[in-house]
Length: 74
Image (cartoon, rainbow, N blue to C red; front, side, top):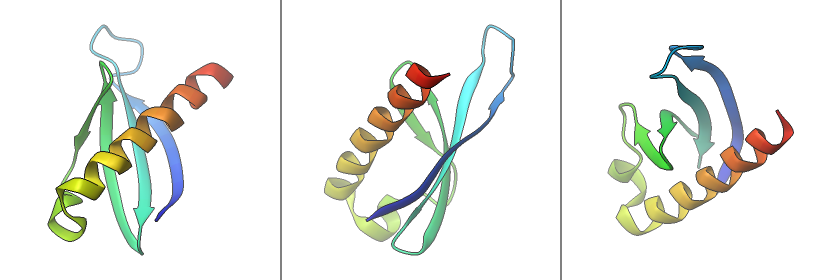
């Protein structure tokens, strides 16, 4: 379901309000968002328009895990 996850250049890098940006592909559709305080904030288009709220919760859980893996490596 979730493919091509990538953390990209942080937004406001080096500042107090720094946010991790990410992009991913779900079922052939590209999505981007921000990650801060263990919350996922989606840019438009929002995934729930295509996949529903239940699957979105699973995807956000996967994003949290992938971000934690990224942080442990970097």
